[in-house]
Image (tube, rainbow, N blue to C red; front, side):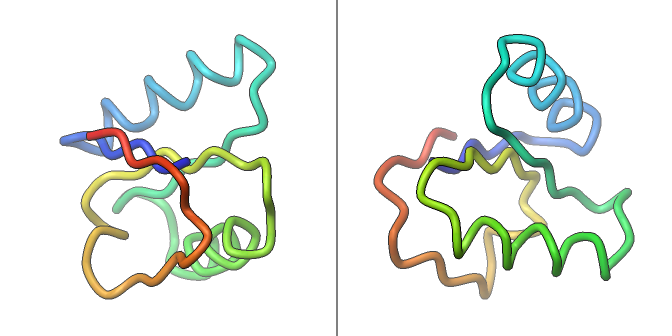
Length: 72
């Protein structure tokens, strides 16, 4: 599952809301360093249960073939 948000701030807010609900969730947005974003992207690609909350930073050029749901 990928949840796209409009800004880095909203992405962070959504991440913390889902984390508070004990969801297995990670966040990617422009305020995170590139190495962090790459690591999280790789984790998401390898995981079957991870929810990725993202700004448009991962909307272009990323390929996640096993995604079953996208929320925008």
